[in-house]
Structure formats: C-alpha cells, structure tokens
Amino acid sequence: MIKLLFFQCLCLLSFTVLTAQTWYVSGTGNDANDGKSPKTAFRNLQKAADLVKPGDLVLISNGIYTNDDRSNGSAVLSIKKSGKPDAWITWKAVPGAKPDIRPIGWSGIEISASYHILDGLTVTGGNDSIVLLHAQEDAKKTKPSPGYNTNGIFVNGRNNSVDDKPHHTIIRNCIVSKCPGAGIAIIETDYFTVEDCKVFDNAWFMRYGGSGISTLNNWAHDDAPGYHVIIQRNYVWNNKTLVNWNVIGKLSDGNGIILDVTDQARNGATNPNADAVIKADTTKPPMLASKPVRPVWKGRALIANNISAFNGGSGIHTFRTKHVDIINNTTYHNGGIVGYQELFANNSEDIVILNNIIVPRPGGKVTSNNKNTNIRWDYNIYPIQQSVMKGPNDIIASPIFVDVQSDITKGDFRLGKGSLALGSGTNELAQPTDIKGKMRPKTNGRDRGAFEQ
Image: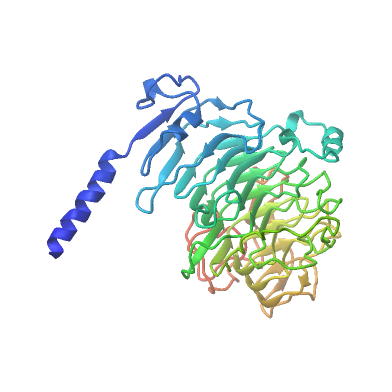
C-alpha cells in the first residue's frame, strides 16, 4: 500500500513537471504567436499572464514593455493566476537580458495571486517627465491621477476575499526606479521575500506617503513559526516624498524600508513617524457592514544585509509592527525631507536590532523610542553619542567607509582600515552571508553592517 501511494505521488509530480510550459516574451515578439519558443515569442507580458498555469516559466527578453491603460488597478503586468506550493510560476529575464517595464497607469507589475517569483526584471517609472508643481496641484483634486501615483511592483491583497489573500511571493534581482509612487509595495499578504534588488528614486510625487520598500497590514496565511517576511541584500536609496500625504495634509514617509502595521486597528492611530494624528471623520455615518477583521499576524520578519541611504524618510523602521529582526544593515544620511531618525522602531513590539551601522545626516538622529515594548538593541555602531536606545556593546565611532557616493551602487560602503566595526559584531541571529553573498564571518570576528571583509 505504501509503495502504491509513493508511486502515485511520483506519477503526480512527474505529470506536473512534464506539463509545465515555458513561455517566451520579447520586445520583437507578436501576440499572434504561440509564445512557446524564442522565435514565436509574445510581444506583451499580459498575454503570458492570461495563459500561465502552475509550474510555468515565463522567459522575458530585451524590450520595453508598456501599455496605455490608466484605469483603476491598471498595470503593465497584472498577475491574477496562482501557482501551487510545489509548482510556483516564475517570471524571469533571459540570461543577459534587461527587459524594462515602463508603466503609466497604477503599477508596473501588480500581483494579487500566490506562489510567484519575479527574477531580474526592471521597472522604470515616469519621474523624469513629471513637474513637481503639477503633481502637488493634482494631489489637491478629489480624483487621483495614476500618472502621479504609479507603483513599481505592487503585491496587493486589498481586493481579494479574506480566504484568498496573496501569499508566497519572491521578488529578486529586480531594479525598480523613478516610479512616482512606491517602489516595491506589499499590502495584505504573507510569506514574501524581497532580495538582491536595487530600489531608488521612487515615491516622489504620490499623494499616499509611499516608500522604497514597504509592507502594510500583513495578512496571516498561517501561524507557522519562522520568517514569513525576508527583506535582504537590497540597495535602497533616494526614495522620498515631495507631495503631501492626503490623509494628514503634510509630508510623510519616503523611507528606504518600512514594515508598517501588523497589529489591529486602533483609534487615534498616528502616521508612521507619530507626528500627526489621523482623526476619525465624524461627518460620515458609521459603516453598516464592518470590514473583516484582519487576523493577528504572528509570523516573524527579517531585515538583513541591506544598504539604505539618502532617503527622505528613515533608512529602516517599523511602525505598529511585531516580531522583527533588523540585523547587519548599513544606513546612511536618511531623513533629509521629513526629519525622521536613521533606524528605529515606533509603537512596536519584539524588535531585535543588532550589528547595524547607523550614520545619521548632519544634524540628524540615530534612533528614537516611541511607545515600544521588548526592544533588543546592541552591537550597533554610530558616530554620535545618543542615549535613546543604547546597548552595552555599542560603539560610538565613525565606521570609516571606503568611498561614499550618492549613487550607492557606485560608492563603496565597505569598511576601511582601522574601522572598529570590523570583527566586533555578535553571533546572535548570525547571518550566513553578507550583501554580496560572501560567507560570514571571514575572520575570527563578525563584522557590523552590510559587508563582511
């Protein structure tokens, strides 16, 4: 009987593998093709999205991919079909290719399904053609224009039923830049990874207070232990807001990385820096049918080995969020637009902050501590004295970077000779590799910050 069951499972797995299809999309393709070979590639990504099944692979060649759809929920690639736990759907650039998705609607890529991998894709927004004054004027209008609010990659569970929220998404090796809205935004979902991405120059013109990489209202898929959220080895810079957040009428966010709201709704909620209270609208009658209560999110999140620099908001922070490990990151000169601190937890619980390099801009602050409980802060290095959150193994000194540049991919944020961050970190929650994938530690001691040397 056991042998029979094994044989049946093996046959089922073999059937899944055999029936998985590779689809091809190319800038020189044609949607009249069958999409099953490089020579018969589709032209548009959505053509493949309408056909994919669990286990399929979509290979994308060089080309500019766009459309003129500006309707509600518009995206160049809208992914609505789910894969399966043993048959993920993968969207991947052909080796050596750099397909460029250029949205003018609400998103470049919007995912409202589960078990998907995005690998090696580029999303470039329209910031270069936007005038700030026009965006500020548009933000005062009742109806928003998608052209000023375009997100790069958006994992969106808000329109899904409570038992069909998206989960299990991996976004890796992607470049998301110049989107007037958020760079990578993830709302009402669970089990997602953002790794080895470059996210920059986003959120400038939107009316919704976006950031480079942001999560909001994690929707628990299950209560299994371990990391449900992983944000690692990313370069995140120059994301900022220049248009007031319409809810509070002032500038907000523009963070490099923010994990936002995993607790339940509360009255008198504040925006992520606790610098304005969002008051209830008493002029409208109460809702007759209340929105379904979001399940308590009990998973854990990891933010590790990232560089977050020159963002208008924080380098990294959490707001009304629980169960996060912030390990071996480098933040530098953030908060220049809204004055946020470099790296901090706000109104959060069970946050571990270890082995980070935290360098505030001139006149800026290292961290803050507002209504937090159970914060573990130690083995961090920062150049100015502070007493808000201070661990016994913290170091107050310059980390001595090799070469700081505003384009952090061209600069060198490795540690220079004589840096006290070399070999002085803790092995607690030890990360196996650094931002470049090099093994940690290289010597007897573990380095602080995103690089191991």
